[in-house]
Length: 202
Image 1 (cartoon, helix red, strand yellow):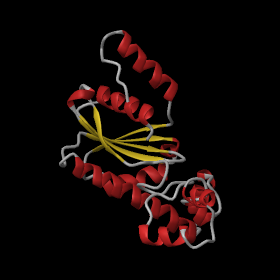
Image 2 (tube, one colour; image 1 turned 135 degrees about the vertical axis):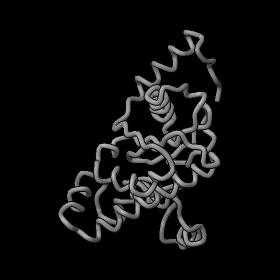
Image 3 (cartoon, helix red, strand yellow; image 1 turned 120 degrees about the horizontal axis):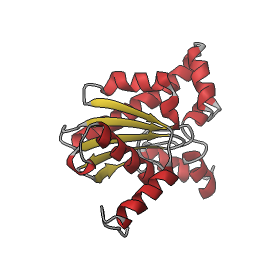
Image 4 (tube, one colour; image 1 turned 180 degrees about the vertical axis):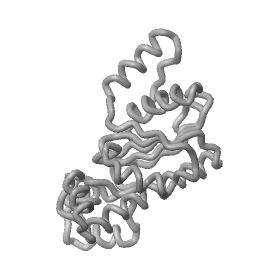
């Protein structure tokens, strides 16, 4: 999952809430080519979808969760090689499989122009993101201080507003568009060097 950006924006949210990251519960949603939704409980990520290869919401290029039985049948049908199946899940899945493009600006413009087919796909992705946020709220027993939306797709106001309309009943929603993983990496190293936290081996 997008650990560096997830942790960085979680700390930023804690600062905005005037609390310590280690004292609050957050749901962080990184939305880009992949979408990871993480439950952060008192400074630890306790649940997160595998955003790379077939878990959680579908994304601009990734299939997200699939019905297992049908996926097995397709994989064993003889129609696709192992590499072709992997590409259908990561690279050629999700929005691009339905709309023919992974360019979310193009998708956003088609939705604004009234393309109903593209809008159905766009809304389905939003629904799946909201559903994953709800699942993480359950993982935190409903004790959620804030939901944080981040990543490149968080620049899309329409997408953010539609997600908000589905999950704002859970907690306050904070939006930090984009990502800065190098800054996050630097900040983490500084926290270790300043004895603010211990280095961890994963």
